Length: 196
Image 1 (cartoon, one colour):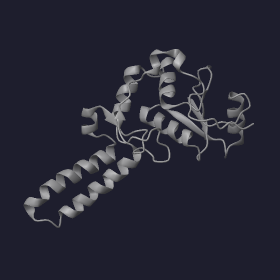
Image 2: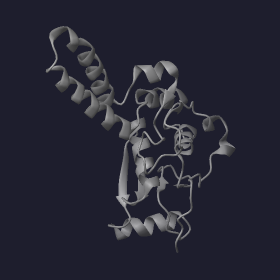
Image 3: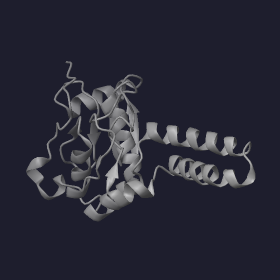
Image 4: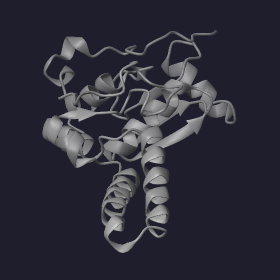
């Protein structure tokens, strides 16, 4: 079982947990701010330093400390927990970030409600657009993004406070780090939050 040692306030912890959910990988989350035993275990895995997240893949190898999404995906592939094709397919299931999903769902619902006040022939465009926006918001998948090979995940369209880039859309990444074991490091995160 994969164990994620992290904290609710930590952007990297929330991002890693969301990435594992999107990949459909079973895992257990232990909040080191609420569980003293989890804090001690996380520090033991990271040479006495408190950093979040620390991800123990449970296979006797080194833990991942503050990994970015590519490093986490690559480690899962390297340790035969997922095939590279599985990663690509599972990540392709969602291509709309969480914040954008909320906007699409609310905007689509507003269009559907507004269509009720329009005369019969004028309703159709509002109903089609509203249904499309609502469904893509609820599922997190946009066929137009899929056809264009882009995603709003990990950008400001995912979670504004956690976005990994400033552009709303970016090309959908194909697992690049899985073929190069040297590119996967135990500390692939964006910043160091080490405290003794």
